[in-house]
Length: 634
View 1 (tube, rainbow, N blue to C red):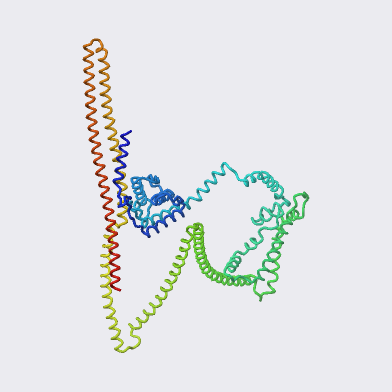
View 2 (view 1 turned 30 degrees about the horizontal axis):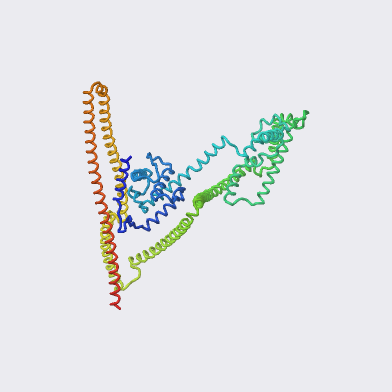
């Protein structure tokens, strides 16, 4: 127990020696200057982490290193990027763990394609100016990943919830589902189509459209293919009407209404004629339509006899009317007239189609532009909605400033466009003036030409001078950049202070490890000596125990045994005295070292006190000197 107490005492003395004291005996603290820009960037980093969702940055008990590095580790994990590196973050880590973690973070950033460069010493030294853009990029990456996987995770959670749980609405729907299905099936059965009429067998020879109409009439449906049938009779006329309606040059509304009414009447007549040929399914007697179908079997013979009668009548009347054109000539003349009308209509149709194609092309371009504008507007609306969702009380001021900057950017773009247009106009005007001067338009006197030539020479000289000045400026800029890089290579006072602080921490850690190692060595040596003494004691006691019975047999052996025991005791006493002298020597050395240390501490206090008094006297001297100068000046 005394060995550990001695080791702890030595460690306390070492810590006491490693401190600096002022003249009053207080521990001297380092004066570290704070950079306002660094503090500002640190506050912005904390605001970004809070906006991203890392709320541990609000804890006041954590150090800035723990907040910033913890936020960076959280952003890397939230980005869902396979870094193949163990980024285990622990608060209040040792200097070695901090160095290892910062090196891992620096290795991970290039793999994530981070556009900003960062070094380990910048993270350890809390260089917030260089850390800020990296934090900004990581927060943006984490938010994008959250938006990308948010809907997927939500839908997955909803599907998992639906497997084992049901909502009240779903339970109500399941309870009413069976009854609703029965009701729907009953309605389908009650309102299914019923056949009211039967079409004749002769309808099989009709065209497809007539068969469809008759099939619909069988089930009591009187609507169908009226417009399609009427349009199918004259496809070219329907095409012209459609083209005229698209380009806005259709027929008059009254004429269209009359045509529609005529089509409706024709459709009604056609349906009535179809209905006359159909019989009701419940009537088994022979209807008039059936009778007409029977008589229609000889309609071909009746039609042939009527044609022969007409030919004979035309031949008889041809002799009385020789001066008039025959039917063939009239028919040919009518064909020619109709062909001319057809050609004119086809030409007109081609013209209309050309106009329609041109207008349709313009319409398609306008539609495409409108779609692009709508897509751009939709994108802007979505971005504005996302921006509104990101708005909180913390970043409300930042978003307001961002909107103001965006508005300023738009105004600057508009001014830039106006300035470019004005420059183009001015350039065109100047080019026209130069062309007029080069072509010799307008006679000018010799003085004006000389003045212009002098101005041109002066302009060339000024251009050469400007070029030389630019070259000189570029050379100076390179020299300034070189000096700036050299200045940046030299560490500043703040960086030196940070390095000193880190080296002190590392030195303290190494010193504590060395002290512990020495304690272990001392403990081992002490236990080894103790073991040797105990083995020696055990050997002596074993020897005494073995020789005791033999010594008690006779007086001679007993006297000899007692002499040996006395010799052993003398040897033990000598060893004890030797160890005691050694202990006293070590104690004297310790006391002398302690006295020397106390003397040095007293000298250090005296030195600091003397320096403080000297500084005070210097201050008083400067104050008195200033007062004396002020009195002499007065």
